[in-house]
Length: 344
Image 1: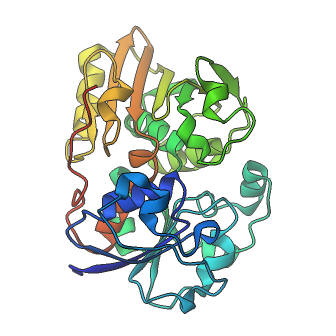
Image 2 (image 1 turned 90 degrees about the horizontal axis):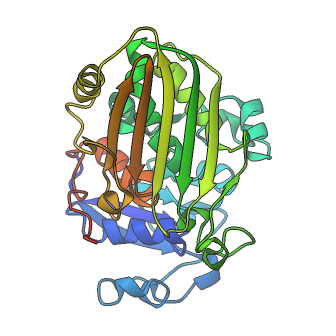
């Protein structure tokens, strides 16, 4: 077990990088040795992330094409746009592990990847070395991995909601997922239909049947159990800055009571610190700024409704990445991640 982990953060100026810094600066076993951001190279981190003023003296470095030119690190977090990691992971020093927060290595099949992300998988040989990083499902594989593909935020909320039912073998027919996200999921740079002033006091669907997270959700669920497609996956923008809320509906092979379904979920997640089974409905306010995913389940006849909520920047991104790092280095999985949300 490595107790002082030297960490590099690539692409530290965005929301994902900001959250990695916020979490890792207070992690008892972490030492951040570099953070890069080409646009802000030379600037103090606290000049870009004002919430970190007084908490770090780090400054941003430029990102070289050959990552071996950077200070030595035990693990590198890639918090860069889709497409960047696949061209750079191969230049890491041999002993440096990697956790990629983009979608570059989440999908095993190169053809499926190209359809989902609209670009060619140019690092197919490295793809085979990446483990899909949902600790609640693949803890042992992550612990042995050199490279981890951190899941998407929608994917995390949906997979955690559906996995117990898929593993049970009690599902049948079509599964419908109606998922909603806050504006921070689109990144720090404003763009049409993603900039918060456009989304504030607005609500709309986007990418019907084509959202890039659908492919990784289906791929993951086939590993969990007998997955019945099709999965109807619809995404919506909601007028908040943080949060994912997924409503999932499925048919079961026999009638289940609320107690039956709650018992199934309770058993499935009994040893998982960051999944909480709640009554009535989760609320994005109670998971905001935390690494928790709250799930509620309800059953009526042969239909089960599952609701899940998480913070898209923490359990949906940086927090889950730190959770994966803990496993990769033999630490207790929750190290540096146990803190409550805010109220309100």
